[in-house]
Length: 137
Ligand code: FES
Image (cartoon, rainbow, N blue to C red; front, side, top):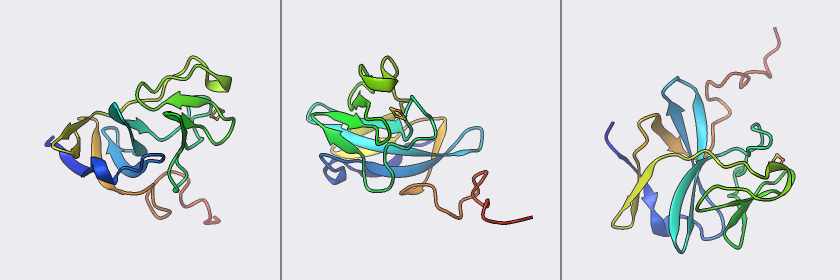
C-alpha cells in the first residue's frame, strides 16, 4: 500500500495530538493519534491499555505533560515517544504503535494493516458496531 500523506510535523500540536481514523485490515475502524516531542513523531492507537474502551484523545487532543500522554480516566501517563507506562493502573503496559514515516517535515502513514479514512475520530454515522445503538428494535 502506498504511503498516505497525513499532515505536516508543524501541524501536530506540541501538547496535544492530531487525530485520524483508519480502517484496519480485518475491516474495523480505529482511531489513531499522532504526537510529537522534540526527539520524536509517533502514532498510537487511540485507547488506553488499562481499559481499552477508554480513548486518550476524546476529540480535543490528548492531555500531555512533560512528554507524557495522560489517560483521562485514571491518570496513567504514557511516554509519548516509547508508548510505555510506568505508573498507575496502566503500569507496565504500552500503547499500540501504528507505522508512520517522516520525510521533509511531512508525516506519512506507512502501516500495511491500516488504510487512512479521514481526519478526526470515528464519525457518529460511521458503520461501527454499536454506532446505531440509538435505534430501537
Ligand atoms: S483507563 Fe487509562 S489508566 Fe485506567
